View 1 (tube, one colour):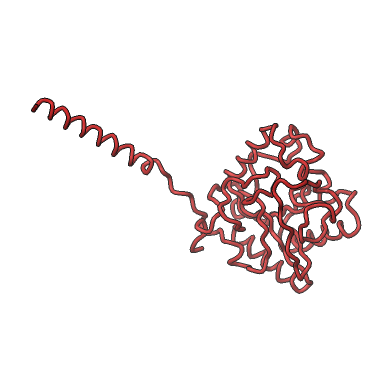
View 2 (cartoon, helix red, strand yellow; view 1 turned 90 degrees about the horizontal axis):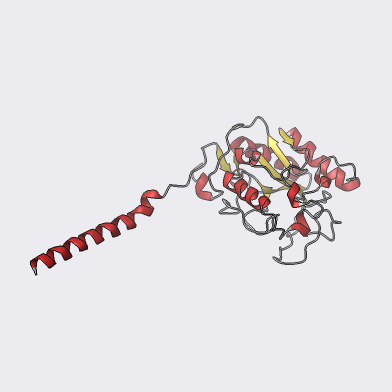
Amino acid sequence: MTVFASAFRALATAAAALLAVAATAPMAQARPEPKAPEEFVALRSVDPTIIQEMRYPTAHNFMGVPVDGYRQPLCILTRPAALALHRTQTRLLKQGYSLKVYDCYRPQRAVDHFVRWAKDLHDETMKGEFYPRVDKTRLFADGYIAEKSGHSRGSTVDLTLVKLPATPAGPYPPGGQQVPCYAPRPDRFPDNSVDMGTGFDCFDTLSHTDDPRIQGVQRANRQFLRKTLTDAGFVNLAEEWWHYTFKPELFPDTFFDFPVARRSVAGH
């Protein structure tokens, strides 16, 4: 009995040790989420009047699913960029307009998600709205998707103008009929912004800021947005009427990967 009891106790001790290792291993391997440097702030803490319609935490984007790294619908930017938007908003409010942001800081994990999606040629869930005339095999070559994004440096923002008083933006019905992003304004997704000729994130040459086919009120709206932001220190990306970067950038060579979440900028 003594031999058997000793053997049993040894087995029990070994089993307990294995269980203890298994229980503590995930904790030992877990890494704390990175936080934003002190130079980053939530835009709402600098200017709560700027409208925020953050698309990537939702399914209403070119992939059709929430994007990795977007924990909350929150605009985060470097403080100089946020302050420049605040100055711009102060001017626009006096003219009866408001800025509306679609995307601000973008973590590298979100860019990686875009890349994985672009390489999956079978996933064309949102083609009907966002890239009707672009073959998915061309997304990298044509510059619509890249492995790095200026958004990850924290001073780039995607935005538009809204005429005040703002009407509510239309709800997005998942699985509903898709209308091309370049369709006439009454037909495409009911965004409450002024008419820029295409919707946000429209993968089409019509999105080029100075595309000659965009005329009249649509062209005037693009030029008004560009002049207003240029006066505040922003530079437009010629291929996307909505894309602006505040210069000089605080972090011109750093691509951050902290999540878009309140805790990332808590206390800033």
